[in-house]
Length: 102
Image (cartoon, rainbow, N blue to C red; front, side, top):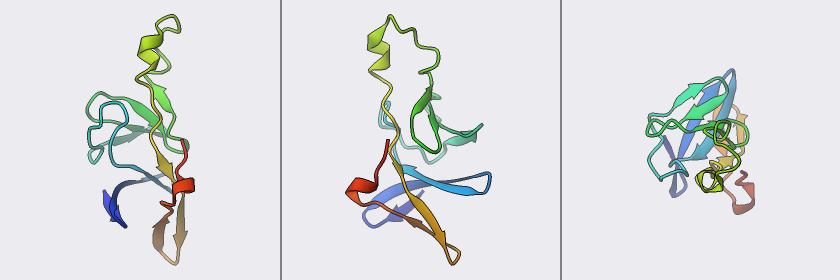
């Protein structure tokens, strides 16, 4: 977890690339500082929701929720991700309003 401007941002390093995310899980707003990386996903330590590192899209439990129970899908908000650039050994995170992607 790092502070960028006035926000806390979660940084992850996976297979040679850096990723930056909002600091709290969109499921129930719990902090992600002890999240784990697992097969290209970030796993929330609280309820084990998993988010794609590159896009923030929920991969689990989205892949097991039945389509005929739409109220479950209402929990599946993407995790905000931010563009990252490594320049001269520094990790730069773009927090501009239009930079946040989901």
